[in-house]
Image (cartoon, rainbow, N blue to C red):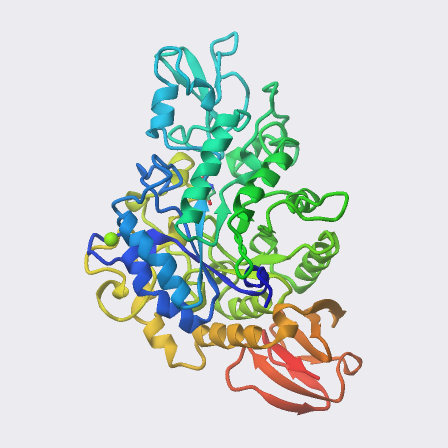
Amino acid sequence: MSADAWWKNGIVYQVYPRSFQDSDGDGIGDLRGIQKRLDYLVELGVDAVWISPIYPSPMADFGYDISDYCDIDPRFGTLDDFDALPAECRARGLKLVLDFVPNHTSDQHPWFLQSRAPRENPKRDWYLWRDPAPDGGPPTNWISNFGGPAWTFDEATGQYYAHSFLKEQPDLNWRNPEVREAMYEVLRFWLRRGVDGFRVDVLYHLVKDRLFRNNPPNPAFKPGQDPSHRLLPLYTTDRPEMQDIVVEMRRVVDAFSSEDSARVLIGELHLPLERLMAYYGRTPEGMLEGVQLPFNFQLIAAPWHAAEIDRIVRNYEAALPHGAAPNWVLGNHDKPRIASRVGQERARLAAMLLLTLRGTPTLYYGDEIGMADVPIPPAEVQDPFEKNAPGLGLGRDPQRTPMQWSRAPAAGFTQGRPWLRLADDWATRNVELQRGDPDSMLSLYQRLIALRRNEPALHEGRHEQLDAGPDVLAYARSAGTRRLVVLLNFAETEMTVHADLLPTEVVVVASTLAGRSGAVQGELVLQPLEGVVVAQ
Ligand code: NOJ
Ligand code: MG
């Protein structure tokens, strides 16, 4: 394996730290809890763990509002607790990826407290301050991603500050070289402590229009949709200046890469395909100088039909710059869970899709046991997104409920009272029960992960899209002389695979149904909603 193989060929597992494992009974997951569960990640077979923010934070947006980039929030533990992690991960062959949140700080960060101080101060220009519009209103029409204006008036200094998210999350001014350097120093701080990379929060947001122009209306917007989509984010996201910043950021991280282990940047980017590709940072000479993995969220948004996914995979493969590493994601802490989007049975097909496509898969904690969204009664809502825009189904609490480990009280997540309610099914859907059950989602994930690891065709092989009719998604993965064909039946009826697609004898090496394996002669019949991997 080459130095960069781990992030190209491995599997990333996302931990939402509040909800993974509590160790001290306060009902909030923490670093010692994560450490205790590293062996589970090894058992599952993943290669890297990405932990959502763990830094000191007033928790207005559950850690995405950071008041100190270089420490650990006491709710999650101490810096000493953190320092145990890189070595514990290394001992198990796991890589450790942190969340880096460069677009905004907390309004309680000392930089912002100083920036808003009512006098000339050296930190004023670290954030985006503007005079009111002539009518006294906000300087532009920009809207926050959580609803409402992206500007908040500061009485003391008579100006507005910009915030792409909550007013408690003021946006940093990335045009200021001091800000850039301070943020790169944050990366170095954690790299020195042994982390293997970062998932970079809303990377495409960092730079805003120099002229502060108004965003145009979005002609496709319909009432009832996410209110932040009312305008096209032309002047607030993906500005041309981003390209240099991405290259700079990559250089900072590359300086810590060694022969046997590359450091990686995974960019959170919600952009159309061809703009997403720009973040690989391809030079005219064909070098890729940007983020190694610009997150590809298309499976999260996809209507769940074979033809639709076929189109997505083809277009993505075709759009990748030469040498760029693909990646795929089924779920995260911001979007409804896969089991709720498509149902348990189809979620098994989705697992096979994610783990057999070409490109680094990222798994969201709990999806491997089929955890579903949990309806949260209004009185228990925690997520500010839901509080700001109630009733639109935008709240993210449902997909952030505590991990279901066992039949112990509170599903083994905490000795105390969980910060967010558990799913009703925790006593019957948990790791302990699924472990020994070959039919379980967990066993399916384990089988598929092991297959992906053992088969170069799957983790580093070529990809070729096949045509198996409207309801069957089909592709081949191959390395050397080994050729595996993946067939995913999206129909609720049996489907017979065309004889011209496969040789007369194939070997089923994996199925979404337990117990199906071995040689098949003649026609291959797929059960309703069955996915198989066959070798020929
Ligand atoms: C994207 C994160 O994934 C989300 O959880 C957060 O609220 C916003 N960025 C703001 O940081
Ligand atoms: Mg705790």
